[in-house]
Amino acid sequence: MQAKQSLSKGPVTPRSGLVGVDPARASARDVGNHFAELAKEIRAAGLLDLAPRRYYSRLALNTGLLVAGLVAFFLVGDSWWQLGVAAWLGLSCAQSAFMWHDAGHKAMFRGRWATAMGLVHANLINGVSYGWWVNHHNRHHSFPNNIDLDPDIGRRTAIFDMSQYGSRTRWQRFVVRHQHVLFFVLLVFEGYKMRRTSLIALFRSRLRQPVVEGLLILANMVIYLGAVFLVLSPLKAVAFVAVQHAVLGVYFGLIFAPNHKGMEVRDGDESLDWLERQVLTSRNIRPSTLVDFLYGGLNYQVEHHLFPTMPRMNLGRCRPIVQRYCARQGIPYREVGLVESYQEVASFLHEVSEPARRGGPVVTTSTP
Image (cartoon, rainbow, N blue to C red; front, side):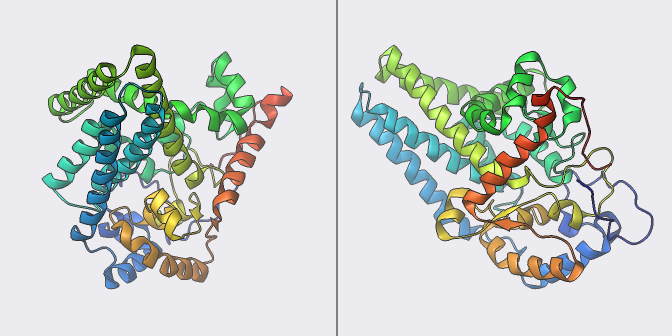
């Protein structure tokens, strides 16, 4: 894929200092004149204003989903019907992940409240390190779809470009050759992989609050596994854990898969301004009440990547403003239906891995 010429005026230089920085508050020199102009319009519309009270009902709903699952777990007892409860809790825990996501972006609360909300929903409820995730996710936001700089690409077995094929193991190369199918199948392990990566980050002292995070993850493991193995027979307990994490992983994966896969792939130092960098590498899923709920607002991926601190309730109002602005600037804005989004992902994964299936030479298609 070939990148469009950057819209920023003056010499094009890598902009690598925006990790963890609110782009809407950055200078035009850092984000580019065109994005600064758009951000000014968005601020004037009040769409970047913090609105914590609007999250209270969502927090109450998530709490209700989890409590309903826990009540069902203890009422059902030692029964294979618990697999249905496990699936419910997998979905509920994925919904709670939207809370740590918004807390990490400071879109829900700021300061200690944001950290506390993130620790509760990530570490305590899901057993995932909030500190690891924030660092990982901030880098992804700064360099989406960049093979060298986006950690979301680096930790995947699937490839976005044939230049990655040489680093894959024998098993991973088998996956790559069939990644248009196996990518979706292997999502069942996504929840487990996030737990594993969190523990690695914890034991390698890569967290700012290792003691707090470690104790909360330990509490999650003790309470969760203790309850499961006390209430259920060993075989049912193992099945319960497997089903819950499989549902959680598939839900996670299906939420994130359409966001960037199949959009422009880049590598090396990033030279595009913030507006082009985010719009050209992101894809929206056409909104509806159901889609907005299932995707936690992440179906507005373009707007979310442009303005990560924006409360999710405002993303839908931001969308037409961004669409009009991109149209005036001649920047392609991609939005498709739900089914079409996964078709595009599968087609992209199939196309990228075609040389591997033919046994042909390794080629590079990323944008320099």
